[in-house]
Image (cartoon, rainbow, N blue to C red):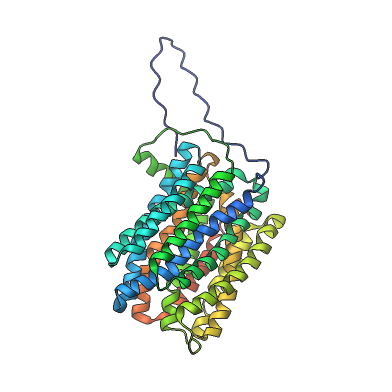
Length: 425
């Protein structure tokens, strides 16, 4: 957020007062503090456990329980409306943490508030109330996410951001496994499942904020809403930042158009082995995909540091993610989904390992890191607003095959979008 200064009182001299120099950007850290990478992993794993456990298992089951005949459209409605809150709260929370000069209090507040938000979500029994409760959940989780995302540009030197990005990226596969196992384990009891996921985030928030020491940054003066809107738009005027935003948005749109409907895909489209339920299939596929992600992240993150080639890794991973979307179209079987899960896990793991490092290197202003990361995180939340509506329409009109093809095409376009970035190899 831009600094605002009051106009100085007139002075009786013909010599104009010197213009104060702009505040210097915080110096890049010489090295990450000891224990920071495990904390980044823990905080992100808990966050993804909640997102995946709720979004992939508990929420679709709850929507199906309430509206079994309109589950696709209703899930699209709930997911799309709640994602609007994610898009709004992420950059706003980032700007607020920039203004305060702190990250840990925001991580702690968002994490602790996840518990009552999840309790409320588990207690409601209508589509309207589910949507409102998940909006609240998205709001508090994006307060948490905006602050924890900013730790990498705040506390990690540029030469080590690929490794730090890998630690962040490992949170997705491990958190996904935890979330799906919790969702499957409590598929018959929504309230307990939601509560367990909320408690996981709260515990992670206590660990990250309690153990992860931060150096207080200079606080910023409040800015008007108009000024906030202007500086958000200014961030996207930066050439490389804009293309990083577009590339991430396209890839995330393609990813969530498919993954957001995984349970319904397994129920209605894939030929499962006799006696296997859709939730049990998800509990198998998610660890398989997650293991592939772990391997890919562990290799690609440090390798991108060594080769100093972020853009190449992001482009290849997005292209591979797009190509593998053809597998369930050609082979709509459980075996086909296993192959898809492996290839997609490798591709998306590489993306997660390197993309965070890439985007931290194209931020417009180091002193506004959390705000600019919040703007960039609209590329995460924004596609989630559009994806459920697009997916529900596509499935309603042409079935799941076209949904896979559309997701693959969007991922390929995301790969092409990183090519114009100039300042990062």
